[in-house]
Image 1 (cartoon, rainbow, N blue to C red):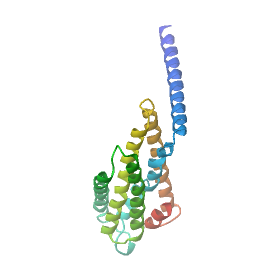
Image 2: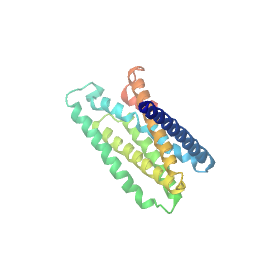
Image 3: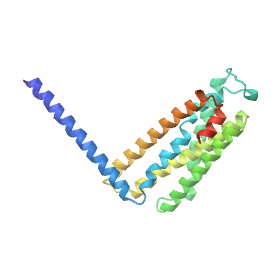
Image 4: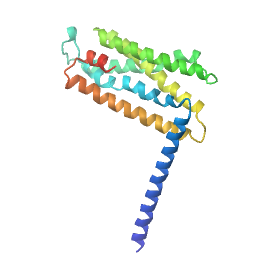
Length: 208
């Protein structure tokens, strides 16, 4: 009898938790729709569509030899170098944007996010056009600098504009959309590269 009572209590708690979760999620979506800045919730979502497939395509870039020939020797080292340049871009981007961005000036945060998309597009264009490995790395760094800026400053915008009582739900929706977008970008980037038989530089440009 005790076991049955405990199981019933757990079921009731699970139903109550799910009901609370559904109610809070609905309240968060309604709150975002009622705010003039609600569209900012899609900043990370849009950025993830750009940088999501990059991790998949970077593997192919690392296997690219002279004249676009397949070169597996040293590919692991080249892949490590590419990801090192990703880190360099993520480190430098916010540092360069910081002097022109201030928490007490929402417009400056918005401009930083806007310009970050320009750098992401510029980096992707370079990755799709250059043949030399070093230029691919530099373009990757430019792209990741933009990605890092929009990731950080979009979060600052939401923290600045959202009410304290709704901030947790707003951030949860923000990150959920970003993860969904990145997953879709990864999937479609791989499809363009494999099933559509498009070279990595062309798939990178096409997906953008």
